[in-house]
Length: 101
Image 1 (cartoon, rainbow, N blue to C red):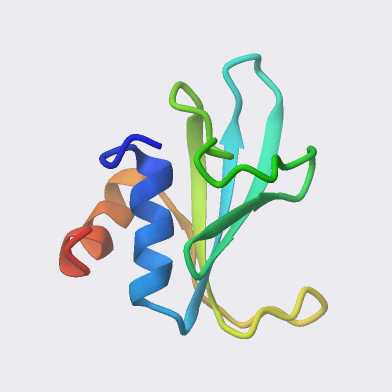
Image 2 (cartoon, rainbow, N blue to C red; image 1 turned 135 degrees about the vertical axis):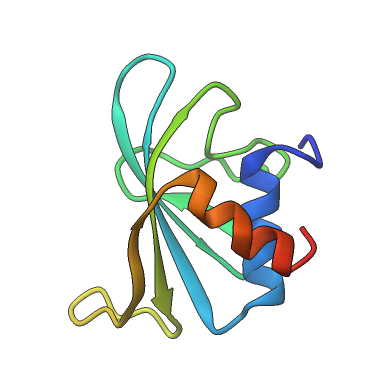
């Protein structure tokens, strides 16, 4: 995985902030919408199959990030505790820089 890709940086963020889970809404290069959950350095698609190879990013390089939600860990899909919702990639960049990723 490319170390400066957004997928890698978001995964690194969740390693440094274990108290958070990221829920990322993306549009794939083929135009499909996907929801990706990122926690403790691992990504998984909630809509599509996820490969077992951690070197293959779940968020493709040319995917468009629609929004990012910061959620308190442990993640409870029935009653998620949102910290912030609907962040743009530009807004999330502030948290990535603060975490030095």
